[in-house]
Structure formats: structure tokens, C-alpha cells
Length: 570
Image (cartoon, rainbow, N blue to C red; front, side):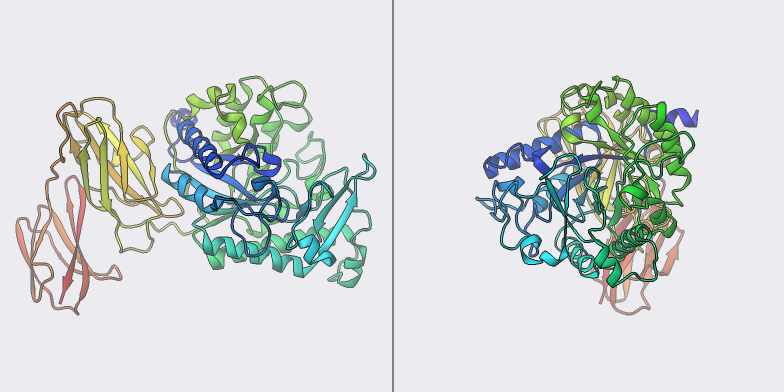
């Protein structure tokens, strides 16, 4: 029974979608559209993703050593403005805009960067004077296509420490200046066929083999070292952010038994299993862009990746583009394929990411997954990261709107071992107040997430409705429940919903004695969270504060949940 509930609507699930900007795959529709059109397109895209039930967006901001944000290192992308190096006019910063808009819709946003690609096709467009190909030609490897003579592809040389330093500095900058929830790399490390490395980097190998006798092993180590370096940057600069990669879906041909195809660890020198073994990623999203059965069996590959995940999260990448007749290569997936993959993944993995956004907007793909996203979900906690929950929110309150809306507001706690990154909002309906623990235990009462201390609900009935809010850390560790706020009879004219004050304190600030009124256990904590006083007696109590001046937290644990007040001892 538990497995069935999980399969239908798990409370914790990473539901991601890639927004690809390279060659304008998803956004913007054209590089020549106005700023207002670009912004409106992105807002509509995020509206659709949020309405579907997606909770995490992978937004591509670096496609070919360029930037869809205001970078001090690389030029504005040609895919944004039609000319590499030209800023949007009127100006806006797409990454800043996307973060704000995603958070406003309760979705996390991971900045998606391509690590090494410089030019998909050499000469396709004019390069800006500050592009790395122009400024640092000694970092480049230019490769000719085996299938199309005269077609060239340029990448940063992964064997150079200077290149590692450069990309690490870019990641550092993004983390410091933007409120992103994660850094995300795709599968382009060393190039895919028809571009072959050959001996293009032999001189780099000869100059610094680092004890390796084999060129291929050295290349794999280049990528392993690079991934470890980026992971260190993320942990040092913004430890609340996560770092993930979406490698090619087959690690090595023949693994697991029966799987055949290109080997990511050998053709691309991207040994994703080594990253899992070393713990240098928080999650992997292997691109399992094949159906069930055959030589690239989805189930066999998903099971294998989970078996080697080493405690890291596994979010299979799903080929929504192959279920869309407009983009599918060859025969499109059956309409049942993606839903079946989501259901299978729920039995083994921690979520999934859909490639790509335009293939799940108003399409049969969206229709096919809609029922599986019937209830919202919170990205799951990662057991290898801190699991300290924030303290509960204080002073939950509600206001009815004339249009039938209910606006909730609350005060995040400033105490505890973890700060709130977002908040989960729950609603139950009925005459009697709900059991708050039961209410927050599953997805059935979950309305969604908020990245700020307010949330507007449109319940669509007359009530009564009971609301509870919890605080979530950046790792989705969840606090205890707030007190319950009940909203009755939404058919009446708009007015403020009265909130019963179960906890009262006076005077505040106070000098020697603080009066406290509330039914339940009262505790007082200092700024470090240490207990300094408690009382289980009901009614009015007096705390004679033989403590240093400062800010203290008074907490009541009553029958319907905790309530807190900050007080100042002078």
C-alpha cells in the first residue's frame, strides 16, 4: 500500500525540467525579440512548468563560453541578442530574472553551464573580442568532423590547469552574485563523435602527464579532477547550493549486461561512476533517453545507476523530446512511455528531469504526466548533506480576499541550526481542526512551496479551511508545524481572519520580569538555541530573567502546535 501511494503522488520527488537556450531550443524563441517579449516568454514558460507540477528548473546560462547573464568573464550570448557580446536593450539580466520568477512560483533554479564547449561550429557567427577563443587561443582544441570535412568544433582544453581555474572562477562568480539553488553541468566534456580527439592534446599530455602512461586514463583524470574542483568551489562559496551533472546515459557499453552503445567513460572520458565513488557530486541525472527493452533498456540502466549511486541522488533524464512528434528522431515514443518511466523511477530513484521544456508545454507529453503530478512535491532531502531542520515559523496569520483568495503570512524564525530556504504550505478542509502531524506527513494536504514568508491560496469553496506552514532548509529538512490557522466561510465579504493569540508576552522589551500567558509548556531559549527557562504550568507565568541582556525566544508548545515570540531583555 505504501509503495502504491509513493507511485501515485510522493511528497518528496525531484521534478525537473531543462530550459535549453543553445540555438534557441526553448528560450528565447528568437534572439531578435524585444526584452519585454523575452521576459513574457520566460514567465509563460515558468507558469506552465509550475502548473504542471515541476519543482526544479535547470536554466542554461552558458552554452559556448558565453553568458545569458551579466558575466565579467564572457560575452553576452548570440542566442540572447543576435550578436555575441551585445547586451539586451532595454537591459535585463536573464539569470537574475529567471531566479526571481522561478522562486515566485515555488520552484528551485539550478544554473546550467556547459563546461568546455567554445564553438559548436567554427565560423557560424562572429566572436566578441572578449570571447576565450580570441583572448586565450592557447587554451583551445579545434577538431574537424569525421563525417563533414571542413566543419570544425572548438573546446577548452580540459588538460590545462588554467582552464580548470577559469571555469571554477565562473562558477564562483555565479554562486556569489545570483540566488541560485544549484550548479548544473550537462554531458559535454570531451566531444561526441563525429569529433574525435586523436592526438590533438598530445602535447599537453607530454608536458604534464602527472604519472599517467595512458592518454585516455589521463583524459578521464582531467575530468575527474575538474569535477572535484567545481564541487569544492560550490561547497566553499555557497554550501547550501547543490552540484549535479547529467552525463551520457551509458557509462560503459556492456554495463550492465546486455547494454550496448557509446561509452561515456571512454568516448567522452566522463567517468561518472568515479564521481559517485568520490562523492564529488550531489546528484547525477544520467540521460536515459531510450525506451524500456532492447540494447539501451531504460529499466536496466536506471537500476544500474541507482546501484552505484553511493548515497548520492539519482534523477534519470527522460526524453520528452522523443515523445513529441515535432522533435522525435524516427518513430516517437508511445504516449505511455514517459509516464511508465516516471512510475518506474519512483520505485528506485529520487526524481527525474524532463528534456526539454518546449516538449512538455501544451503537448501530449504534458497530458500524459499530468496525473502523476496531481499533488505537489518537495525536492527530497539528501542524506549526505546537513539534515538540521529550521525552527518552526511564528505567527501564522491569514487574510481573506474579495475574490475568494486566502493570503497567508508568517514570520520565519531567526533561531536554530538551519535557516529556512523555503516554506511548505498545507491545507485541510473540515469542521474539526486537523492532526497537524498527519496533515504534513503526505502530499495530500500539500499546496506547494513558497520562497518568501507569504502564500496566496485559491481554495474554490466556502470552507472552513485549516492551514499549517513548515520551514524547509536548503536540503528540504522540514521544521515542526506552525500553529493552525482556520479560515471559515469564504462566501462572506473580505475581511481579516482573526487569529487567536495563544501566546502572549508583556512588557516587551522588559527589564527583570516577563509575564507569559499560554496553555501548554513554555520554554525560553537564547540566541544560540540553548534552553534557559521552562515551565509546564498553565495560565500566566512570570520569568525572572537572571540572564545577560539580549534577544530571547519564548516558545509555547500547545495542543495545536508551537507558537513563538521574540523578546528583548534590557
